[in-house]
Image (cartoon, rainbow, N blue to C red; front, side, top):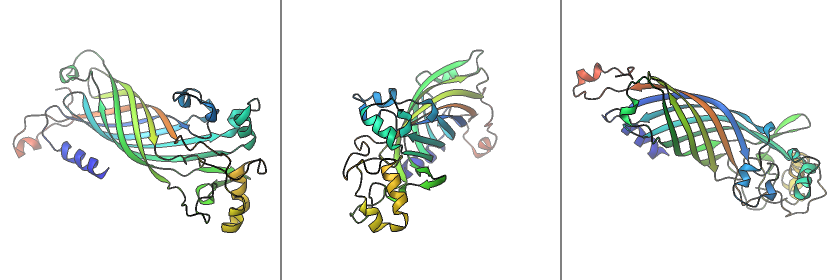
Length: 306
């Protein structure tokens, strides 16, 4: 990631014709996909992970700020920061569920987490050609796709007996409890894939866009659920102070129903999230053709119409 940031800084200093800088802010929703989604154990095709797991109660807020360097045509590179919220509940399955989903409804595990995400991305806008972005009397519509690389921080929590409890220190799947394993890291890598459409008025000074980002991750512990139920004795042996809380948050409301090693989550699928935002962007254009230091001092950065 450091190399990508260096490349971005160096590239922004080049005298490339018709470059323009873009600063944006956005707000919208975020939605989690993972082991505590509804019907998560029953999907039989990849898109079902997305299509079959929507629950409107779990739409949360997301916010973003970005800087982007737009090149002459079609391509741009950006630095992005997202602040968002995620949550998931076994209880979303409902009392009328059957099989694994009914068991999960009765188990009633849950989580919520704040996520802070930073990433670099490359965006492609096939309709953004330089002459079309000159001042005209028409609005300009530009679809786009993007691919990024970044990191994010999270910290899954739940409410237990009226109190907010952090789940990772409890080792709910036996991590670090005398078995040569370690707790999962709360900082992870992500690959955001984006798509949307930009609307730019005739002035070409700003734009409004509808932006969707699906962030692939390399962890299955955003919700603190991944593998199997641990041996209950591990909690009292290696974490006696929090043994009762850890056991209850590991096994839920059916502590005597599950055997050691029985499936607790789906370790074959990592956790991801989707965001959808409306973003407002303001443009600062560099005038090209300046060859001397004096000319550079006279450049107008705020005139995007010439």
